[in-house]
Image 1: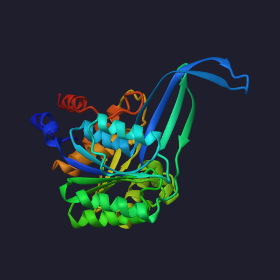
Image 2: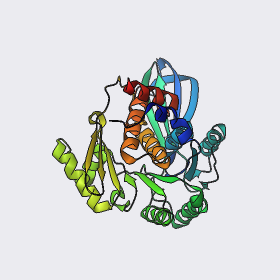
Image 3: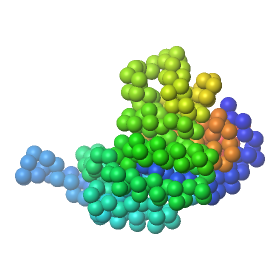
Image 4: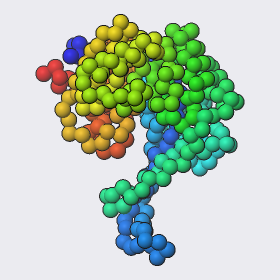
Amino acid sequence: MLHFEKNEILNLKSKFENKKIAVIGDMMLDGYYWGDVKRISPEAPVPVVEIEKEFFRFGGAANVILNIKSLGGIPYPIGIIGDDQEGTIFKRLLDEYDIDSSGLIVSTERPTTVKIRVIANKQHIVRIDKEVKDNINADLELQVIEKFNSILSELDAVILEDYNKGVLTEYVITESIKSANKENKIIAVDPKFINFFSYENVTVFKPNKKESEDAFNMRIVTDDDVKKVGSKLIQKLNAKHILITLGDQGLALFDSENKLLRIPTKARKVADVSGAGDTVIATLTMALASGINISDAAYLANFAGGLVCEEMGIVPINPDNLIAELLEELV
């Protein structure tokens, strides 16, 4: 259970305020084209979507950044965008949210990663992805580390947000962790399958159930399965904490002594799980950076992730809603 008093919950926003968090990872855009279908194309047996509106939102690591901003923190995005129209849109969104863009590297060799969703008559018709998933080259790797090291002393924490789009190479992972540990910074990791076991010596490693299953080529069905995977990860990665998100089964938190804490998910009306993992890692890291212990930070992250699941589409956590939800738990 949550070990906060009422006044501590009410003071969460002030605790979170101005915490400086770098996010290194795959910066992405989510694009939406909305319209109607009234006819079939004469060129092929496909619907013609007459677009009525279009808009772009942050995706991938950029959604983590937006969650940090929404919680009152100061995010520093570090990653790659393309020298293209989508890169211009990405920078414009950063400006709109008053987020520092100096950690972004513009590449002429890679496009901005963008996922376009075409929605017609309230139906998702097709998704169009524009991306290069190859690892960034050695020059870009060095630039990423240089950007990170240039602000490291100012930071409260760093999040490594991996979507397997090529930014978090083994070199970037190991060098950023090495630098952060030298400065005793909090290091939170949201991994994907590639380089899964490269994230050694971090503060908290947060895979989801599927990523954990894929990494060990096993199904996680029973509580014993959860314990087995958590124990293996603690031993293999030498992390201070492992936090496995288990969907409707809640969270499993392990410490370096292999102690397990299970955090159940509160029953909710789930509208959309998209972006919940981004909210969890952002809230968890903000809480740790604010001096909140790992178990309470995990509880907060669990609540926050559940709240965004009640919203349609990918939206950041609203701290007022989070506080209201936590206060209800005290009643």
